[in-house]
Image 1: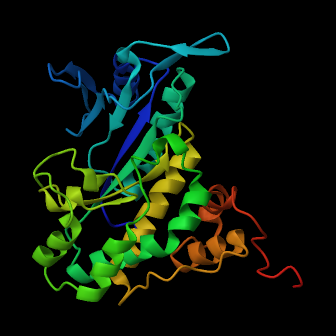
Image 2 (image 1 turned 135 degrees about the horizontal axis):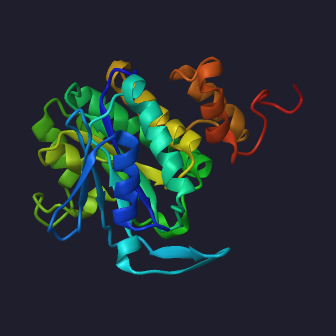
Length: 299
C-alpha cells in the first residue's frame, strides 16, 4: 500500500508564510522564491527539483502568540503547506521533521485549519472508485468520531452523501464518464469551477474528474504533531489500497456498540499490523468509546 504516490496540504497559522518557507528551505537545503499571485505563494525548491509551496488560504483564522495568549494576526499568518508529489518510504521522515521544525518555530493549527491528502488516481477504475465511495460511506460515523472533526470545518468536509451512494450502487457505473455524471448530478454550477461545491466532502472526486486525477481525503483536522500527520497519511494510503484491491465494498455501517474495538479490528484488516503502526493505531482510536481488546464487556 506504500507504493502509491500522494501529496499533502497542511493548514496552520502562528508564523508567517515567509518564515515557514525560510524554515523549509533550511531543512530541505533549498531556495525560496516568491510568486506574485493571488495566494502570495512562497516556493521552496529542494535540491532534487521538487517544489514545496506555502500559500495563503482564506478559510484560515489567522493568529499568533503573545506570551501564552493567542491573538488575531494579519493575513501573512495564513499558511497552507502544499507538498510536492511524495512517496511514503522515501519522504515520510523528511515531512515529519519539517512539521516538527515548523511547530518549534511557533506554528500551530486552530479549529479553522485542516489537512487534505491527495492520492494518485492513475490506477483507479470505475470499480475501485465505487469501492472508495462505499468504504467512506460505511465508516463515515466512525471516522468522524475518531478524527474529532471540528464543527467549524464540517461545511468543508461533509459526510458522504447517502443519495450519491445509493445512485452509485444502483447504477453500477462501468465507465469514468458514467461515474462523473453521477458525481455532479444535482449541481447547477460549471464542473470546471475550481471551488465546486461537490469538493467539500470527506472524499472529494472533483479533483479526480477535473484533470488532476487525484482522489482527495479532506476529513482531517490540521495538526503540527508529526505522529498524527503520519497516522493520517497511513490511513489515507491504506484506504486507497483497500479500494484498489478489494473485489467489492459495501456501504453497510459497522457495529458501533464498541467503537474502539471496531476501529482497531478495521485498522488491522487494512494493514495497520505490528509495532511499526502501534502509534498510528493509538492516535486513530484515542477518542473512541469502548475497549480495543474486547468487543463485549462480558468477555
